[in-house]
Amino acid sequence: MSPNPASVPTVADRMWQRRPLGTHAMSVASCQSRPLDDVEGLRQTAVQLAEDAPLPRPVTYRAFEIQPSDIEFWANGRDRLHERLLFSRRGSGWAVSRLQP
Image (cartoon, rainbow, N blue to C red; front, side, top):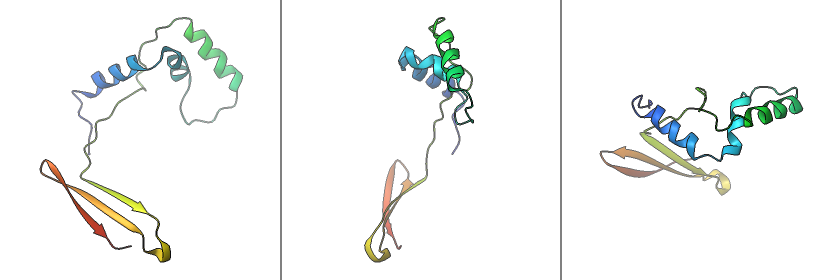
């Protein structure tokens, strides 16, 4: 699976523009999933950024187009008889098979 470089920036731009404006400032101010030591400081940074709205899409806000070849659905079953369904891409469609637990 790999992104389609020709369409990814365009898709990310459209996604960014469709998001509520109120979410832009926090998305620009924060570094998602990094440790947060100062909640109020982050909030104030976002408030200050919001004054300059609308904000351009940051380079860290990206879109990826993936094309999976296989997808497995797993459901817990009694006595470890789990339900596992494997969908595999076949041409323009999908083939499904049941897998053993």
